[in-house]
Image (cartoon, rainbow, N blue to C red; front, top):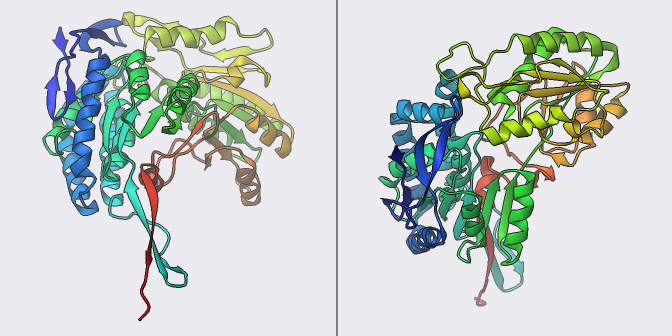
Length: 477
């Protein structure tokens, strides 16, 4: 079985312990490659390399960093077929989705960060005290420790290291223990362009991530993961007063008012709920619909669910692939094992182990109540719940009545309502008559237990900088 390698200080290296973990194909449930299980010595080596590289990298100009990142994007794009094949094997996603959407988006993110490196903004300098001149500098934070998730492996890794490197930092990245393949491959491609030590990538489990967060070298920790992970990371980082950026879970409400085209809206929401097998923190998973169209909408949503297919990457008709792992499939199933009697599964609701894969049927659940676990907690699967509301105020109250605040959606033709409702929704991103559309130029941030910080837009670059005030005495003429 193939052994993957860490990438540290410009070199592909076996883990110093000699330990590896099995990487499983989620369409078969069988291991097909082994990834490094990095321990303390590997984490130390990666941070030592990043610290050495930072001494020079921090002094590069924005133009120099920009040019190199454009070259990185070109290099990844030139090996598109290889990355698409690797990502599909590791995640089980449909080839068309990765080839036509996810991978091109990943390259686009890099090109944005490359351009944004040259466009740092800040307060204007000036004389604010008589006889003194002030300027404000934006400087890189230093060495950064990054942890990326398994739902969009390479894309989310780029969301982390792209803005960090663009701002002049060096990084140690740990991808998810179940989906490290493309991040480790990308490190070797990128390492042919960037100086050694600027980007270091190490494989490992949660314990490796804990070692990364607790390490004394990084000045900033950025993590995309679960709410549990965010609490643990914040607690650990606080011991050393590290800066922390967190993009955590979500429970996106989608408010559907009575003036919409029911069939069209139901089809669009089904697409945004089942995309990537619902393994998206911003998935349209919690539909709140005006009671006057509730029954009609549910019937349309059930039809859309029943028309949604799933399967391995080779299935050209599949909308989505398997769930990430046997562990995650069991978690999704647990929501239905303890589903209260007042709830009704209108479509799906079952696991499908065809071929040994970790599939779950496209699912619609009605009759749920606000305090139900399936309403309050992130399922992270192809599951959509539906609740009625009687008024605009009730819709807003139900939408906000969860501990997450990442994203929300609103469907209506009433512009006044759009202005009222979007201002009241307590979420970092609100889509209107659309969902899961991503523009790299716009921020991606969460409220409440969805974390804090930004991975997109110029705000992402600023996330990886610190501000310094320089005041100079000016001699009288």
